[in-house]
Length: 260
Image (cartoon, rainbow, N blue to C red; front, side, top):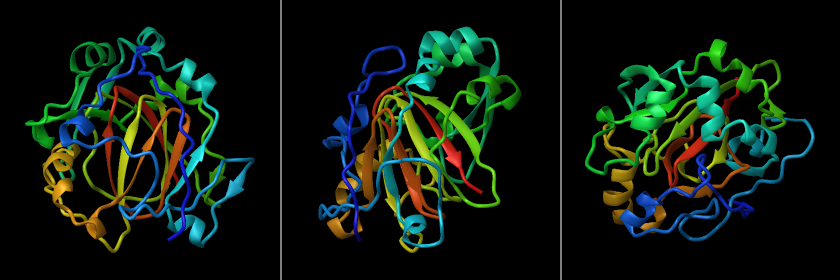
C-alpha cells in the first residue's frame, strides 16, 4: 500500500504553551510522525492545492495527509479569544466511549476552566466527558464562517463541521462513520486507523489512553493500526467506514469536516 511523510510543524497549546504528552509517555511510546504500518511502509497522499473533487478510486479509499494554511482561523481559537466570544454559552459534552452517548450541557467557560484536564488513565469512557461535535451553529456560526475547509468535496453533498477542544490524553475510542477530514488547530492529535475489513480489538467503554497502555503493546506488528500524529495545520482524510481512534497528546483544538 503506497503512502507519504507528513510535513511537521512545531506545536503550542491553545493557551500558548505545549501540553503534556501523557498518553505516549504512559505507554512508553513516542508520538508517531508518519501515517504508516508497523513495517514502516507509508501511505499515499499529497499537499492540498486549489479546489478538487474526491472521485471514486484509490484517492477515496485510503487515508491521506495534507498540510493547509490555517493562521487566520487559528488566531480566533486561542483560549482568550474563545472565552471572550463564547464563555457564557453552553456546550454539549459527550461520553468518550463507542456505543453509549450520554450528553451533558455546561457553560463553555466552566468547561475550559474546570473540566479541561488531562485524561485519568483509570477512568472509563462512560465517565469521561469530551467536547466535540455537538456545537450550536447559531452561537458558534460566526467562528465557523472563518474556517477554510480542505478544498475537496463529494459532488452533490454539503459538508458538516464539528469543532472540539480537549485535554492531553483524551480522545475518542474506535468507531467508524462516513468520510471526512480532521484538522488540528492547536496541539497534537495521534490517530490509529484500520480498514473496514479489519475490526480492531477494543473494549467499547475503554478510553483510547487505556487501549494504548494495555492493548496496543500486546499487538503483533501485523495487527497494529495505521497511525500518525497531526500537528497544527495538518489534516487527515479518513475514508468511508474506516475504523479510527484518536488521542490528544496536548491540550488541543481541532475541527473535522464530514463529507456527505
